[in-house]
Image (cartoon, rainbow, N blue to C red; front, top):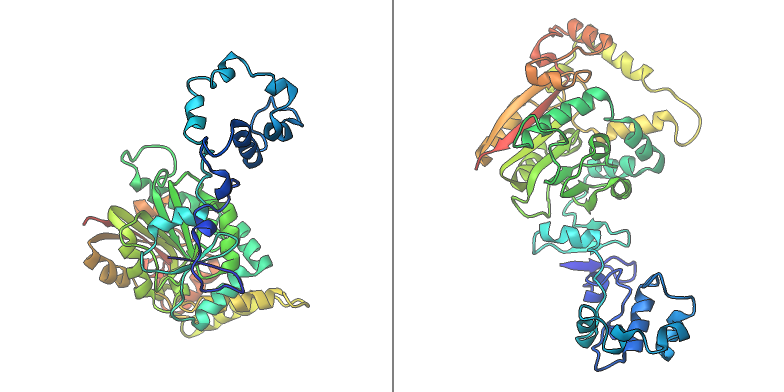
Length: 408
């Protein structure tokens, strides 16, 4: 069900004119049959709806339609027009000419994927806004940080755009192709749901041509940017998704889980969206064991955070930006916090997924699928060593990429 999103009408049901015919430049009164209007009147209505109705129409032709056409148009037409137009054109007027309907709006394209009982508000910017059962401090922090005009733009332009990141994701998505050697992005012509899409980093980095690309996020400002990248925008809580089950060929969640209050709940919500035979792919959530620090390793890590926060005057200084960003990462605020590999198996296997996990450091690309984990930065390796953790072991890998295939 759809509602308007106006300050004075919030919560009211939208009328068909507000969503079915949104963008249609022909009014209901102009869609009449040939018996109700003469041919000149019909052409005039069409000309009002489509100003460039014909490249041969002169500037005074539109006014001439309603008064019997201009001299060059109304001298009797050609023989074909005088006899009722050509055989291919005349039936349209005889039965009541109706212009081609406009393409569906973004929300109309999103509509088939929403749960039928869900009431969403229609924003003037064509963002579907779902009910939010709860609104936690973490949700507030994410909505603010990723919706901030400057920080959101910076995040879109700089985060998750490197070659290693793109190579890793391209290789993961290639599993969607029937032919593993097929060129192009694996999600081409597929229905894709990007949970925690933010301002649109993943699609901006990878490109491609999904059949449908739905971006879900809690931040209105981020979704405005994601729309410009190419997403159908849905403002919703990842813990309570308003989408139908089994709608997506692939669900992606890049750097999402550690921003959410209940990681297991969000992972299970994502699993419900995947069609049998589809994939759920996540990446860049911190592995708990890799960030466990103690002793001198903890001290070194804390010194790194202090030097990572330069202070400059002004309201939007890097210090404030970093503080808000850390506030969004509720499972990455302190050493020893993150997720464990067992979480993926415990949540996804009951849904019928085959779960493959690839621990890796952030500087490695598609090589993770060959067993490579890459090397972390020197200061990270040193702090791990001082904490009694082998920097070369799988438990020291900074993140885990999960590629889960749903068999049933």
